[in-house]
Image (cartoon, rainbow, N blue to C red; front, side, top):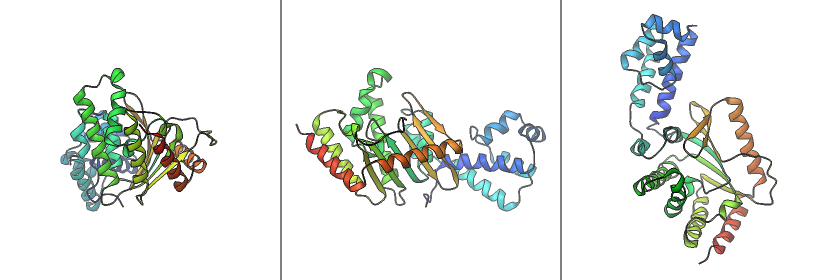
Length: 287
């Protein structure tokens, strides 16, 4: 079940989606609706795309034009009210990209999440020291300040608490490439603690961690991705890049990523075998 509070990001997207569906059911184009409302076409488009927050008067005017009944109007006002709330991730907007904060907003209402990572331990599984080393490694490229690094570390730790340790945690599945267990960030003690943290986290009932070994068949030539399944909203895939991120929303392509994850998961070790391998790597990270 999704969080009782709900995510304002998801509510904003749902509000825009509902308004677009109401318009389409009346067989009105965006331009025709804008003309009847006395607005610019771009205003209608931006509201439907969740790029502009409508006022209560805007929502009421659109609902009236689209002949929505009282129940639907109450639903729209409820979405508007929830969309106007502040998400925890907005406290870190000074340090995170716009795409990533949107991702965090969607993740807040995720019921199932699939993560494939071939390079570094995923953020949800990182220790604080490992996270600091990973972020600091980018400093010469992205030019983070010391305070900027700390803000990103804080956001990462906060995210873990909000996702993995919330009262209604999502089902989270990870497939990790074996190579990332051997890629050193910081001192050996940092890596050993990170391996031990993976083992501890893997014991949580809603978390699955599987390792794709170097000897495994691997025909999926793609970088890391996160597939999000949200209640009441279409699945999306998030791809993280060096400076920003990208969302895949086309249903066919999202299904392709889902199939890719299932393939990688099938080729990976099972959960118990993965723990044995991670434990072995932890033993290797000795000073």
